[in-house]
Image (cartoon, rainbow, N blue to C red; front, side, top):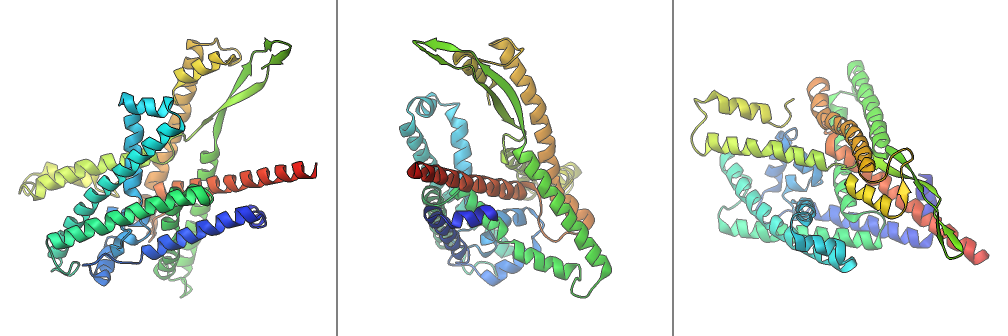
Amino acid sequence: MSTVGNALKIGELRNRILFTLGAVLVFRLGCQIPTPGVDPAELAKFFAAQSNSVLGFFNLFSGGALSKFSVFALGIAPYINSSIIMQLLVYVIPSLEHLAKEEGEEGRKKINQYTRYGTVIIGALQALGLSYWLENASGQMGGRLVYSHGWGFRLTAVVTLTAGTSFIMWLGEQMTAKGIGNGISLLITAGIVAGLPSAIAHSWVTFHIGDGDPGGILQMLAIMAIVIVTVGAVVAIQDGVRKIPVQHAKRVVGRKVYGGANTHIPLKVNQAGVIPVIFASSVLMFPTLILTWYSNVMGKGSGEDWVTGLIGMLRWGEPLNPKEMADNLKKYGGFVPGIRAGRKTAEYIDRILNRITLCGAIFLAAISVLPQLLYKYMNVPFYFGGTALLIVVGVVLDTVRQMESHMVTRHYQGFMRRG
């Protein structure tokens, strides 16, 4: 809070913060505009019954836009998927690798443009799939969710949702350029935090806090303690690093001596962030979809217990390159004390990476299953933990660091002017 207070005293930083808040407000307003052809009231009832399923998970990341089937129902997910695909393709396609490593800023701009094209394509496909799914769900419920079926509704949904995703992508880029922090991450965080007031109100009713129920009050206090401890653990792991000491040999160039400084290589405990959790969720969902299709569409599964068993086990809610780093150290005259340069340094860094990655993976697994444990054993009526918590904590920490960086730059400029 002190950082935010000091940031508001600086004109340029205050304008950036206000621009960011304005963009978030536009995003939240768009989440309330329903797509033509759907019944918002019936959709709200349908998603309320699915709050603790995978639909509730996706609705959380869309900031409640999916439950309203609003123009922003897809959220920023198509952009994230397109970005991940492009990052993987950079290491597979030589021409993209050349753009990323050799072309510099121009190459990165081209890759970003390809990412935007991919976002539109993925968004259109996801919108088409959502429209089909909503029609089927509407048919099962007696035609209440969608007013009319057919290609008219599907094309309307595809155009509306794809345009909404493209606008969110543009808005996030503007926030990054003219605001404070990473715009895409802030929009995801805004969507997650937007569900906090309703979660608190739901908990108040579920645990009978207003009636003064002692058991409910104790349960709520226990949940609050778990929340505080978990957030503290996430902050510690997100900021946790393993520092490898590095010494640079002295070099004499003319009459000047360069190098000789002692530095370190910071290896983060959780280097991949939330990407492993997202990929694991996708990998677990894919066989479930295939088995469900095999069971329902093909007319199988009624007498095949193994299909039903597999679906139950997989259902939602059931329980840096070390060689390149070593070469760069050797190239610039750096070495790890006590370790021979070259292959031995690469092996040393690889061994440390394996150990801290194991710790980070165990932590991610624990955070991922926390929501299901809280719901099953403590009857917590809201989603807490997992990817959502990692994103919120990571984005808040990164935004605060950027504010502090701007303030430090501002102070340096002030010192120079006074000098």
